[in-house]
Image (cartoon, rainbow, N blue to C red; front, side):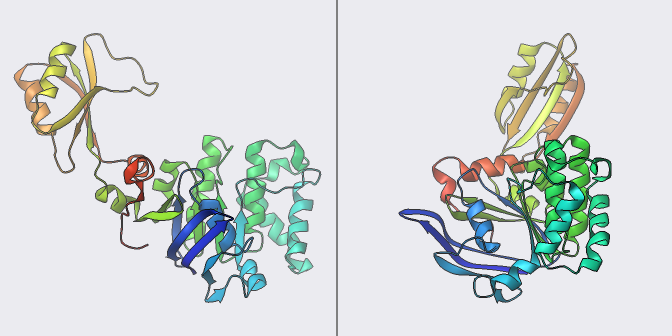
Length: 326
């Protein structure tokens, strides 16, 4: 378990983080989010013992991360955003080297290395030096070095950067599996990844925690709109006018097709935004039926984690807190 208490870090006159508090129990996957410069990396470096705080304390299994630095480091596997690799070494040599640095028994090296090669899908690359690997495979080697000593705590900073979609799914599944038995902190800018992987989300902005809760709790607490996407066969201008005239419709806009096929001739596709809890589907269906148009698509999307993130980290209200666990 990790306990972060009143953590503050100053770089000269600049305050990177201020009075940061949170706890991560064993068996929880925590998504740690924030815009660039918000204080994520500083917080992670303090937790992992790379630097001391100006004020506050980090406890790992009730041990102070500064007073018991070596013991705490043994419990942590860390993948920084820029993976520190020796590019002139091959994968087996590098993983063996990491184990020697960590003081693991030589008798275990081969077994642990084989396990990491299997888990991280590195078997086809064993004849290559790390410098010859693609960015995605280098990232896999970085994940392997973080896990090679079977740590109780894993801190992964952007673990899927450079991976293709298949590799992302594999690493995501691995993170879920590891999260059942370990304390795991995942730092990433890929918000769908957080939604799919994390039990809990912390959002930090301007050095302060501004949200703490499950992805669902944060969406429910946000003041964003519901989005209703509709595709209707009929006269576009009349469809838009009818949608705009619906009581409770806050905004009507042409829907972004995100690379999908263009609409059929004579069809219009719109997004209708409404206040939370306001379900406009029945009203829209009634309009289509009464005007004898053809409804081709209708689905409602609640506030996205991306909307919550932007609401909390952009604009004058970014300093307000959301959630009750921080």
